Amino acid sequence: MAAELHVELVAADRQVWSGEATLVVARTTSGDIGVMPGHQPLLGVLESGPVTIRTSGGETVVAAVHGGFISFADNKLSLLAEIAELSDEIDVQRAERALERAKSEADASAERRADVRLRAVSAR
Image (cartoon, rainbow, N blue to C red; front, top):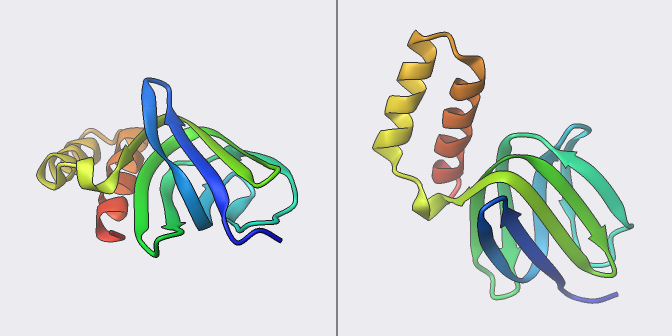
């Protein structure tokens, strides 16, 4: 069994992160899933939530992901997201304002997006 897997996190508009990892945790419609090297092949639908990547260098990369697909085969993990942004790209104050606005407008999907962004930042 290999000690690392290759990860590609891609949003509709750009490649967000690419590299070698020892573990990736993501939220799917079936629940949270952890993928390590040698995992069984899988294909799933991503839910909005933080994705945590433990790199081969021991660092942790966290991204806010909103929808898409996850695929794993031959030690290659692809996360194809509708929207994804790394936690260090997120403007916390802007996300907090968006959360308050969504709550006041009773916009559940906007509230969920803002909440995921803030959870990704807090998981850094």
